[in-house]
Image (cartoon, rainbow, N blue to C red; front, side, top):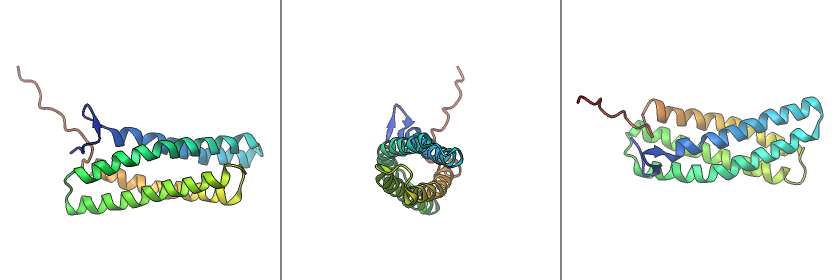
Length: 149
């Protein structure tokens, strides 16, 4: 079942969401490298990754919300979708807060704590999104019947 946020049958939310997940996960790795190597470059890289992830998360969230409003969901799928929506929006907010704290002070302690918290929140939201796609087949284009000619 697909929602209305698609391009030529390809679900935009499923395409776009991989970017913030990759960028934000990368920020956790670069923060770890910065702390381990005591090299400020990695903290700068983390802030850039958080900024790029947050920038792409907004259109991904908009596409996800369009799908949320336009796909017919069972009661169980709606419950999972509600959780996915809340956890994913929370991740965007937490990463945006981390970005605002770290924009001037790359190694801000609370900013790094928020980055780690955002990663954990993202993990929950991503799990629920995976449930929607894999268990409930939301955003999945069913294969066309085989050509019998």
